[in-house]
Length: 312
Image (cartoon, rainbow, N blue to C red; front, side, top):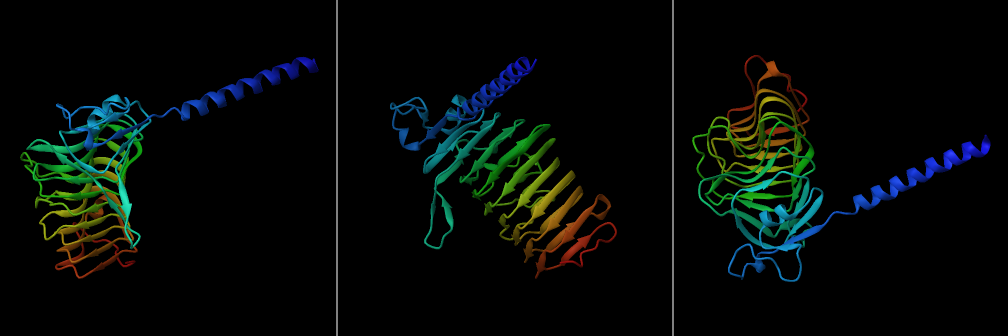
């Protein structure tokens, strides 16, 4: 009996070992693709590098070739593309360099190729998408640089360490949009450490970064300069929860605008806006440990009702 138990235990351990080895092999199976605009010298802008089948001239071409879990490194340069659609788990990284002062600067710029583009990057109904170190330039042709959308748990997919710049394009009649946004049922998305220096058109619900009809959205450690816009720095509109933490927001109509959404607003620096925070207490909003100063009309305006904002 002892020998039989030992054989069973040994068989079980062997099976576990095979599973672990197989899992490790699977985890290491990601392919790394390279995108470089220097390879566009051929007759087609989609010409691949002749040295290998993992090198492409456009980001969208690399995305089409990649499998879920793969990595796409985008070399320094400028990439003019139509809407870049992402529907699978990918890591997309631009190039960057470190300055003498120790900060990092992006070297990879993505611009709309066509006029009247609603979005530059469209991330639809998938998980584990991580985008970093890109300069997204609206270039007068797009109003939204990146959108996560679709009724889906994105598993804290993120856009981070990017710079967003440029004049906004045609809004197609929309008054509800963000330069970086999550909407239409998106859940668990992060916008972190981005510099937003793009034009924010002055509509009631327009914003630099925000969400609507979405939840579990993290907006953290971004720098947003509205340049005197009539729009908002950050907006949380419908549902939530949203977590707005550690951002620096200046020169907007409302630094943070809340409407029909649950928000936690913590540890932000909000200054020289028209209104620092416009809050809707009836939906649940906590405001604490923020630095709110030199806003023209109000530091915090609650409507309807009142809100506790003393711990700031």
